[in-house]
Image (cartoon, rainbow, N blue to C red; front, side, top):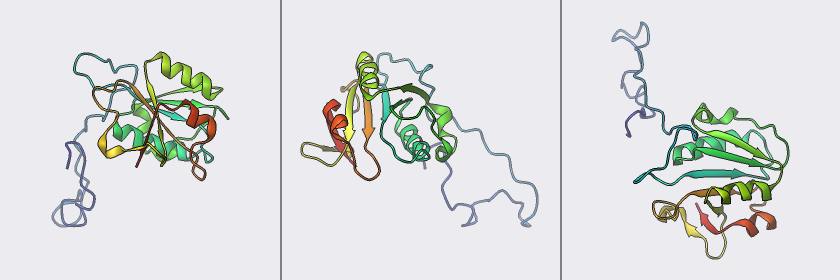
Length: 173
């Protein structure tokens, strides 16, 4: 188990559970875990630092899915979520607190979001099963690739034509 993470089910197997041996009593205080990533404003790219990772969100049909995306993104090292188009409002309910470890930026159109990311030197990588897509396991976004923005498609239809046109590369999960 990585440092700072507790294995699921440890309490069920007798791994503590925060109780006294008699099964009663106050929960033990938890050790403070290090945050998984710094906020984007604090993250500074220097020699040997990993490249900046962004998530570009456009066309998500269910607002509560943004929070679930954020949780996965923060686990992968994303420090900024770029929201484009549609309503300015979004829901981070499903993030379970991961939204505290990234910043959010809104743009009225997908093209404005693309221009912002390109201005930061980022490649836009669509998450889509298509010809030329590489497995995410190959990590075609790590060191040596520079800043990368991931863009997932709509829950039902995937990436639309406008999204496909602005992508530099594609990965599949």
